[in-house]
Image (cartoon, rainbow, N blue to C red):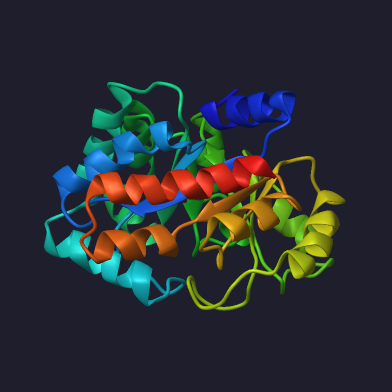
Length: 263
């Protein structure tokens, strides 16, 4: 059982919904990023999604793209991202970390080496947005053999014919993308999300968390009420990009987490 599996099992036993927070590793710099990441569990975050900076983030909107650029300009790399996770693990051996990004940096490092290093750094799961199920032999299956969850995205355009393929070899949880398009492009609507979550639940026993378009405590509560949890990324990253102090960013994160946990 991974930390992700254990976390969702505990949340279910406690009758609680999950709050998942996304931040870009190294944004705006390594030290500030580490301070924010270390503060996330205390702000009520159940699962941390740690963005891996990449030069061509095709699925990300301007907010996340700019965060990646800031991180890369500050010298952030895959190696330093793993070092950041290692530092976090010195004080927290419970909160799951999902590394979210693109395949190119992993491929460049070598899959076997990457998985070994990621496991040692305390990474629990992967979301690699540009690897479809047809490419599971590349990373998904090796990751699961290494004891890490491989989390897949489902979207409004994942129809009933495609859905079983998307669920194959998925573990940890399913990340449902509430809108069509890039991150931060529109607001999620619980009325639209609810029937989609129900449809996906007919295809899997995994928890389903919903992300994209959630930018307030009220929205986090509404979305979490129709799913197993809510994910917020752009709204948090935007505040980091504006230069808010880590304490202020974390206070905002806590308000979002409180919203999701009220569901």
